[in-house]
Amino acid sequence: MGYEYIDYQKEPSGVGVLTINRPKALNALNWDTLRDLGNFIEKDFPKEEIKALIITGSGEKAFVAGADIAQMSEMSSAEFKEYTDYAHNVYSLIENIPCPSIAAINGYALGGGCELALACDIRIASEKAKMGFPEVKLGIFPGWGGSQRITRIMGVGKAKELIFTGEMISAEEALRIGLVERVVPHEEIMSEARKLAESIAKRAPFAVSMSKKAINSGSEMDLQKALLLEKKLISLCFDSDDRVEGMKAFLEKREPDFKGK
Ligand code: DAK
Image 1 (cartoon, rainbow, N blue to C red):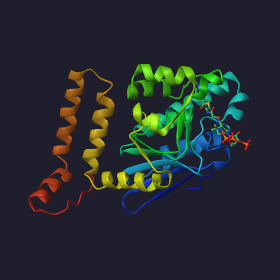
Image 2 (tube, rainbow, N blue to C red):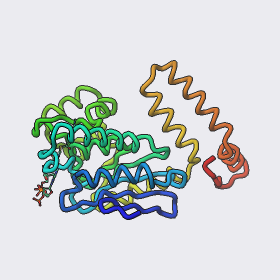
Image 3 (spheres, protein in one colour):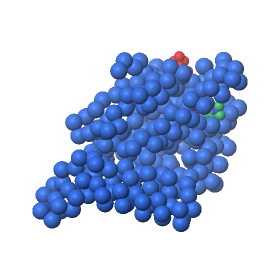
């Protein structure tokens, strides 16, 4: 695949591990890194094969320390708009991959890095992680989907407190306010993320994917429309080979052999 700033590995369990790899700058997303991430997700991510994707950062200190401030400071308004449009698109692509995504937050997740974690379905943080939106210290605000995704995840009041102050919070505080789902010892971040990904990978992939769609799309609709969507998607699951296999395996008291269709 030949990417300079990301690594990707598929594991035998059907879990993919995507690592943002620019540790010298705490994995800050400059144009090249963002482009590698975008090209990979759009063109090379083997979505038919992968049952859960873990996204993490390279090195001991950071998940992603945000957009690249040095590069941003030199941009014209037009370049800044292009950078933002591109980032919006990449984060939406990540949010909408068919399988669940897990952010394994192994250190700083700031600004655009915290927004990347918010575009994932589930967030697990190392106890050493620090999260926040320092953008207002730089004269901008979280504009890669952050100001919108965070309010949907943890409510308007806390989102405003984090965004208006620009303060970093600890992993424990992130857990308390619902910004992450779990906090684990630093050295166990990848093993815990893998354990979670592998437990998802064992389930019926089509059903997991449809449940993601029902939750993501349904949460943007009024309840009646969302219930109609749920009915449509559950019917698709009922007609799948995996549903036949899952129920048959239960009755035969054996493990199911799901094919993802
Ligand atoms: N950009 C570029 N380089 C960065 C960086 C970043 N975000 N974060 C860290 N680095 C670099 C440092 O400059 C340093 O490089 P050298 O000096 O070694 O060459 C190296 O990484 C190590 O960092 P430090 O020496 O600073 O490490 P410390 O442990 O002392 O501090 C830190 C770690 C994470 C507290 C600190 O590095 C820091 O505060 N970093 C900046 C974090 C930040 O402010 N992130 C948010 C970036 S703004 C938009 C909307 C939003 C956005 C973009 C557009 N639109 C609406 C258009 C997104 C904005 C952001 O994400």
